[in-house]
Length: 87
Image 1: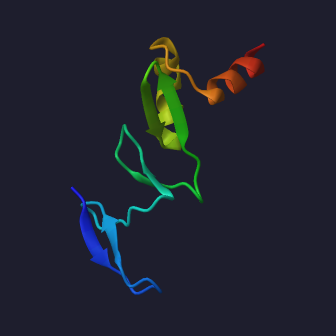
Image 2: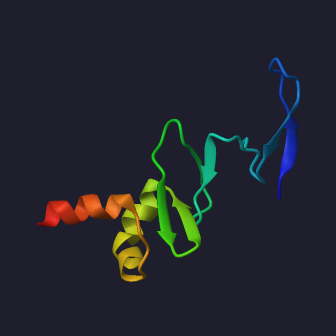
């Protein structure tokens, strides 16, 4: 559920926040497994695709479930990097 939090920047507007009060901006992304908010300017996110579906993951969830996602036919540019290392 989104809430709005007043901030005092030049625009003096409202910024949406999540239930924990974390600001949601275009630079933030929610991990679709654990729900943590990732600042995309400071931390990596991983995007997986399968057909019409997309999934954004934090580093921990991606690393912990990488083989599972490969086996479930998810596609990621980061999988191909691993495959090249294995050869």
